[in-house]
Structure formats: structure tokens, C-alpha cells
Length: 133
Image (cartoon, rainbow, N blue to C red; front, side, top):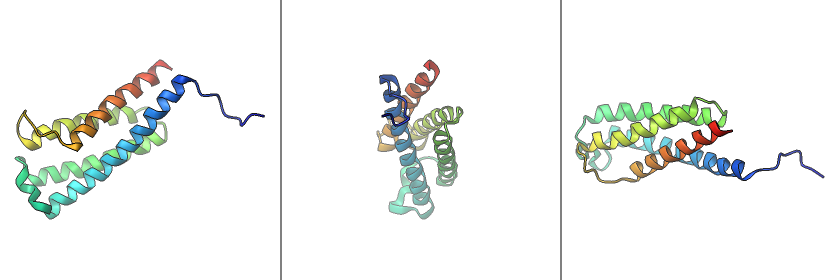
């Protein structure tokens, strides 16, 4: 008796775990950007004093990034081909943003930076797997 499902090959299983991890990391990025945007708006724990760039600019860019991460999540769930490129661009934006916000090359490595780097690497792997199919 079959369930109507195609057998999963090792390649499909590999891309599946990357896909679900990407979804999880995108959700984390949405939450992070919403919380950080609110933190700048309400100046929680004097966050404004920790950045060298205008907090207003960071707040606006954070809100835009949150919306774009939501769009990328929607695109990934709907299996849109453009979604992976948007994720790559947003991950790079996040990585570069850490350097800009801290105002120096020798930055403090934050959880945000680590997640953005992981998102970038996994998105590149996922895109490569999509092109190999």
C-alpha cells in the first residue's frame, strides 16, 4: 500500500532540512527586526546610545527589513523562485548593517550577525540545490 507520496531521495531530504531551517531563521529575523525597531522607537535600555548612526534611520531601515523578511517568508512558503534571492540580499544587508551600526570594522559579534551569516550560507546552499535539480 502506498501513501501517494514520492520516495525521498537523500538529495530531497537534504534540501528539505535546509528549507525548514531557512523558514525558522526567517521567522527569527522578522521577530528580531520588529523588536529592535520597537527598541529604537521606545529607546529601551538606552539602545540609542549604542549606535553611531541615527537611530531614526536604523528604526526605518529595521521596519523595512522586517516587512521584506515577511515577504521573503511568504515567497519561500509559496515556492517563489525570487524568494531565495531576496533572502540572500536581506542577509547581506543585515551583515553589512552590523558594521554600519557599530561604526567600525572590529565589531562585537552579535546573535543577529551570527544568524544573518547562517542565513546567508544556508540560502546559498539551498539556491545551489535548486539549480542542480
